Image (cartoon, rainbow, N blue to C red; front, side, top):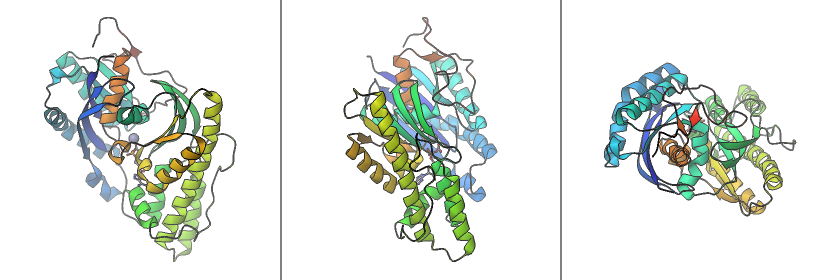
Amino acid sequence: MRPLTVLGIETSCDETACAIVRGSAPGPGEILSNIVFSQLDAHRPYGGVVPEIAARAHVERLDGIVEEALAAASLTLSDVDAIAATAGPGLIGGVMVGLTTAKALALAAGKPLVAVNHLEAHALTARLTEGVEFPYLLLLISGGHCQLLAVEGVGKFKLYGTTIDDAVGEAFDKVAKLLRLPYPGGPRLEEAARQGNPKRYALPRPMRGRAGSDFSFSGLKTAVRLVVDEGGVSVADMAASFQSAVVDILTDRTESAIRRFKTDYPDATSPGLVLAGGVASNGAIRGALTALAAREGFQTKIPPPRLCTDNAAMVAWAGVEHGQLGFFDDIGVSPKARWPLAGAPLGGSLSAPANRSV
Ligand code: KG4
Ligand code: ZN
């Protein structure tokens, strides 16, 4: 298929990002530019992302970041084949900023628009980086999501398991806060855990051994709080004990999903186990899941950390994959705060209009 060059925009949380990617399915693709502005400093005083502040910062920054991404790729808008933007799920103010900007660019340059599901963008990143073939098993672990999915194709997902309460990144962040580690907690907690004894505190492993692949983390967080409330907690030992519980839970739930995947796709030889989302940058988690995959005949595929956390290269790549299938969106497509990957129709207004070609 003819390679496509797509400009992608990501504004669904606290990163304002624009990237330009060229390629064709199944990948790998070429990242021509990838600009990410993290709003971390603006949110740090509040210990979490403040939606109003995020939306305002996206408005202030996005135009300049789009220009930067074009300049870094030595391209102009007329050189790209399509404009892609995250249309959900996420903080609605930010999503509106990114999607509206993408619509304006698409209209101004006469280019087709792709409204990208942020979760699908995370899910397809391993094709951008390594050209992983469908079907593969995806463990999506971020601040807002914790899911195991079979990825059959673009827009074709089977949900194997999801969290019944907190996302795993949220649990990392909340426990880090209990331990008074600075925001954002996940990476700090991993750092603290390196010096700690993972066996010091006996913590529960909710859902371990249960049928299916659902997750639960709120009981684990509560168990940490009870120990912390007693006083005298060792931050390093608690960080290590918590991380070790998370590793056990993720390993157990993924193992169960691997069994189901093997039944669902008996012909898939040496399929991929793909990790995505910010928590996939955690070394202990990467190590444990890589070992599990090797035991089960799966190949672990983990994008580099800067493509695991929120970025626009993954959005542009989702635009490449959609564009090659002729899946474009109407200029009237609406942003969505909620937009599950599986169990819902493929997109807001996906279509392959005959009058649009790339
Ligand atoms: O994918 P992401 O950048 O944003 C979304 O949630 O969409 O993920 C951010 C989450 C945060 O909860 C952060 O604490 C967590 O990923 N995280 C980590 C690590 N790096 C980021 N959690 C554990 N260990 C890490 N090294
Ligand atoms: Zn994300």
